[in-house]
Image 1 (tube, protein in one colour):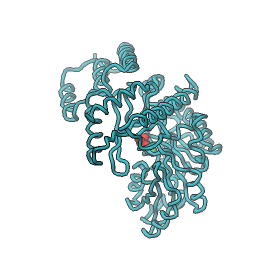
Image 2: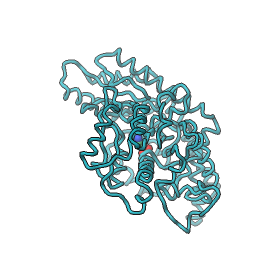
Image 3: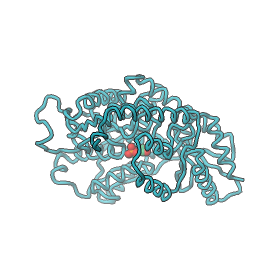
Image 4: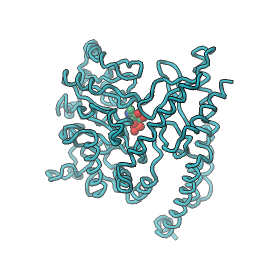
Length: 471
Ligand SMILES: Cc1ncc(COP(=O)(O)O)c(C=O)c1O
């Protein structure tokens, strides 16, 4: 049999596919009850050497190959995973991913993804409604970083006019965000050519929220730098501590000064889908643009991000490309060709993964998940407060809890070293996965409680493991 015939054999796909799903279901069952390491730690060079050797061995079936890949991967479905903000996807969404990857509908234009394009349109409608943008419009894109760049390009297009797209822009411009804003804002401004100086940061208060009373000072700073401000980015919520900026106050400021308000809701805007938690984003309906990652708190495999605009015409302001060979002109449904509004030309049909969850379980799945991880975060913070010498950085508003062990006799530097070493040893042992951050220059341990099956018993065991390092 030729390699091509072999590679496209439907019966081989059926056989191997069943085996892969069986293996993954077994793995899911084990992860669910916390069996096996969260991450089988190997240093990067060791991992590379392993795969270099394996890739040169004789060919093997895809099921065997994927089994080894899974064993050596970090396990987000393990209840001892409390690391970065990437979800343990609900399996139905992963199945949708399998189907969409095989069908490979590239989505740049309607014809290259009719179902995916229509589903995306439907998801954007639901998301705009949840966010309070009844007239709003938007699209899906590959991740919060790209989404932020796209939204800030639209802000630039709106504030500076279409001329910005024709002639480019100079260095006269700036954006304001808090010192705790995700680095994607700084990166977007660097890509836009406004440089590091193009970002004016506002200090945060004791809860790591933007000091909105200092926004006028940020405008003064812009003048000092010879820049005009186009937009303010609100963290909804911030990455390190999950703190929500005061949207109504920031919106008032933007209205007063004619500035674009961008809500970076990559992580926290997901609460729009939970009636009990939605109050946290009150005021987002006044934002000009907002982003929301489905792959963070909404159980969808990465990447899947919504970029939303309160004014539907603004959703066209980021890019303007003529491509005679690609985009249909003067169509009654201008939204049909996804690539007109997104950075991507070919784009993953991410909508089908979100839609699969919606279709199977309804939006209550999202609400239930959000309730579970938010409740766990508050309970964990309570526990930490009752267990000195642990301390909590700030009362959690999201599912993110920052804490550290602070034995009274140690200096700040010793406390930093103790916590960093404890984390490294625990993570490398494979028993838990959690991360660390720096707050006001000091090391804090950071848990993002992404897994709805993580329990307080598990978190107590994590604290025992950290405490064991204090000696
Ligand atoms: C507030 C915030 N914005 C943006 C991002 C970037 O999103 P992505 O990783 O999808 O590019 C993150 C990621 O953690 C985030 O927390």
